Image 1 (cartoon, rainbow, N blue to C red):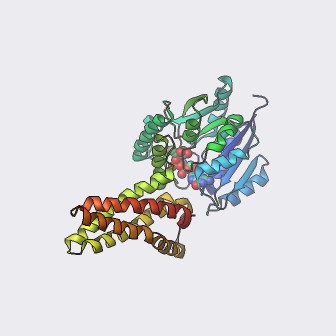
Image 2: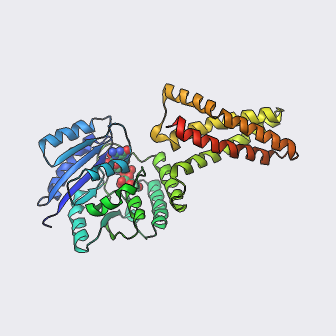
Length: 360
Ligand code: GDD
Ligand code: MN
């Protein structure tokens, strides 16, 4: 393994307590190798970056990259990989679930078989400890793995693992095409170049040392919209898919509001207006936490954004209502068709406004 330098990139978000024990493990596992570790922290609130800085002063192989304005496991990892010195880049979690003792075996596999990537796959069938992965998470992970394998057109036992290594030259070639945030960097890498030579090495997924998991429903949502986007051959970006899916829930809200209004004796025009407003409100809320979470508006900014959203989409709302009323009057009181016609115009308008003005 002479001439090999390994850069271990550890993305962190609130992992202060876990850093020192992880480095101790790494020091043992990688003895005899030329290595460095880069901790990429997204401005954790628990003092992770102060701890990483302290450790970097004690050991020159340790480096901190602090990101103030961005959040995301994949984007943090990419940033670390781009700044690494090694010719082999290894990504691993900072919470102890990935044991560095597997790294030498992964390097050996990478080099002897002349591969581009080696990933360490969790043995999902064998995990019985709910502290490493809950029963529900195992089910979801398995389903995610199944969908993920379909998307990249390779059968992998764990395309969602966060523990893998890639040769730097291979990574640098495909890095410009990687922009998707979320937790699925390996999947993103493998689907961006089908000719990458890749192998899996099974490993025992450990238990988190301290703190809690950051994989939440938003991460799952990103994954879903990412897969749907890939299913369209990346023609429709994940954000637009998210916007449309939110729009579909708005549709349900709209019809509930509309029929509730009609049932309580409101005129069609008034019921339609109210339903449009209610649906615009729920759409705004969902888009704020799902579609545009990375540019999420809070507090006074959210209120202002909401008012801007209503104001800016007033044209769409007006168009919606007039198209709906017109169709309704022309085509013999077909509530469903007239409403759909109105909503189609409105949705198109709102996406343009949202992306350009509200969450710019
Ligand atoms: N910089 C940065 N920014 N790091 C993050 C962020 C973020 O927004 N979110 C999570 N991390 C870091 C965590 O601090 C940890 O070191 C690592 O990424 C993994 O996060 P966990 O929160 O521990 O993930 P998990 O254990 O629930 O999920 C596991 O399974 C996923 C697939 O199901 C991990 O192995 C993931 O890597 C894997 O993708
Ligand atoms: Mn974890």
